[in-house]
Image 1 (cartoon, rainbow, N blue to C red):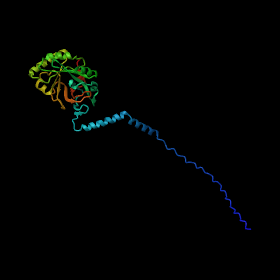
Image 2 (tube, rainbow, N blue to C red; image 1 turned 30 degrees about the vertical axis):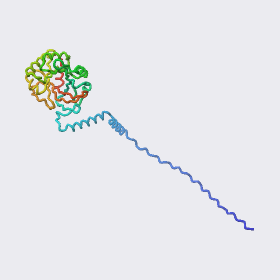
Image 3 (cartoon, helix red, strand yellow; image 1 turned 135 degrees about the vertical axis):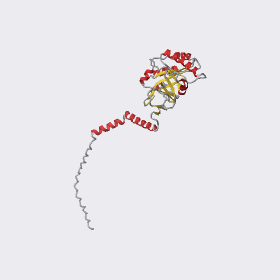
Image 4 (cartoon, helix red, strand yellow; image 1 turned 45 degrees about the vertical axis):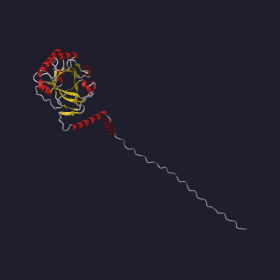
Length: 296
């Protein structure tokens, strides 16, 4: 018989004891110190300033002032350009105004009133009313009514025609305009001879002035260009206040004895609410003198 094969004995593996699981504790994070209270307050204050409209207004004002300073380099500081008005304005004067007629068209007087650059704004307006003995300015009534509503001090002027009766022209003017307390004195605009002699012009002008003065109890203002005044009016109407046109100059070139109240120093001003260039004027005096000039 064949030999019985021996059983192979497979040794049993020794059981390895299970390792104990060690749970590691995660390290405790240290709390970072918070922002100090005084720093929080400082940051909040800075943000408040930066987000404030007043801050931006200050920055804008500083910026525009710097630009103007650069633009004004080399200019006469007493006769510098005012960008809003698009003209140079003599710095010496504090009360400014305009004169208008049909040429300026329909005026938005509220926009005129609110326009301002630095200390310059429109305080008075002298409005064309009549011409000769038949012509009424088509915009007079509207301008006379609407300008006064805004608080602008007003006067009216008559364009004088020396070849026609001065008294008739004065009557026509006074029938058209109703002057009231607080208005500036009436104005007569004389700047042409219209083919008559200087003597004839002065005779009719005197008749006009006397009639208006009698009706209003104030001396009317005489308007003229500087050359016309020097050639034909100087020495004849020295008791009457003058309004003289003399353009684009830093100073009105008249003697200290000349009794002028208004100086029309530009004919090219740009004014908000008006679609055409406008004559720009300065008053020769302070607010007290301006009040004294008004009709009582």
